[in-house]
Amino acid sequence: TLALDSSSKPLSLALISDGRILASYNDMPSEPQSSVIIKVIDSVFKKANVTVDQITDVLFCNGPGSFTSLRVGLATLQGLFLKSGVRFLVTSSLLLRCLSSSDQSDTSDLSDKSDKAFWAKLPLGRDRLAVGLFDHGAQKLLPKHIQSLFKQRVPSCPNYYEGFLSGEHLAEMNQLFPALSSIAPDDISRTDPTAFLTIIEKKWFEETSLAQVRLFYMIEPDVGKKVGESI
Image (cartoon, rainbow, N blue to C red):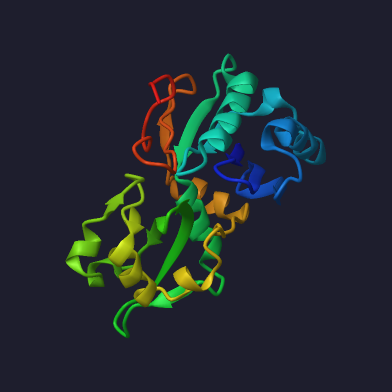
C-alpha cells in the first residue's frame, strides 16, 4: 500500500506491507510540492526496494486541505496508477492528524467521566478552523449547538467527527481544548506516518474511483466538490 497525505504544506507518505512501514517521508519540503512530490515518492520506493507495479492499494487523504496541495497529490497518483487497476482508498487528512496526536500532548479531558478526546486542526484564515475530533464518548458532552457543527466524515469510523468553527463557537471550543488557541494561528496539526497503519488496520477509509475523487477543500463553499466540478 502506498499512503499519501498532501493536503497541506507538510508532505507525508508511507509504503506499507503486512502491517509495517517499509519506508516513509514526513517533512515540510523547501520547494513547492509540485516540484518535489515525484522525487519524494521515488526516493521512498527506492528505500523500500519496491516498484510502482507492485502497489495493489493506494490510500489518499482527500482533505480538508489546500486546493493546490490536494490537486497536486491526486494528479500525481492519477499519473502513476490511473491505468494500473489499483484499489483506491480515501480518508480524512484531519483523521490522520487526530491519530498522529493521540500519543502526544495535544489531548484534553472534557470531564472526569470521559476518556480522552483527540483533536486536530487546519487553519482556514479569518479566525476560522477546520477541526477534527476523535471521540471516545466525549463528543456527547459538548454543548448541543457545538455538536451540531460536527458531522461524521468517515462512515467506517463512528467515533470521528469534523467541523468548521469560527467566532463564538471557536471561542467555546478553545475553552474545552485550550491547546486550540495556544498554538500559532497558522500552525497545522502534525502528521505521523505510523497513523496510516491504524487507518488501514481499522479500515477507516472509503473505496472510490481514482478517476472521480471527492476533494474537501479548506475554503468553503468549495468543501466537498468533486474533481471536474466548477470551482
